Image 1 (cartoon, one colour):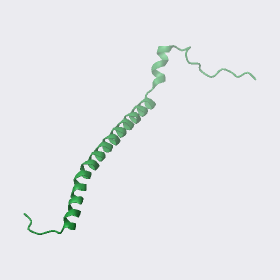
Image 2 (tube, one colour; image 1 turned 90 degrees about the horizontal axis):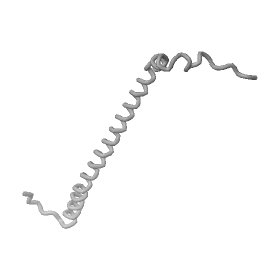
Image 3 (cartoon, one colour; image 1 turned 180 degrees about the vertical axis):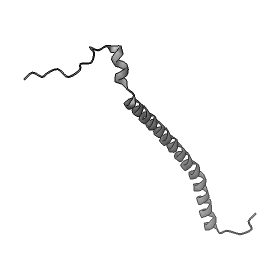
Image 4 (cartoon, one colour; image 1 turned 60 degrees about the horizontal axis):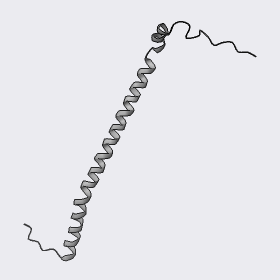
Length: 83
């Protein structure tokens, strides 16, 4: 135990600071954890979308759909324009 005698003003200020610290620390910690998890989830979704986009861009879709749809589905060149 501490044997030092504190004055009324010192004890009041110390009690208020301790109370504010005890109530604010868990609140700030919960907000930090919550927003960190949300940010992490958004980064994961962004990364998965980016991986999907890169995969689709490098996947030879035309080569796979051309034999299925037949040769008449895709015109070899655009039709001539009427002037």
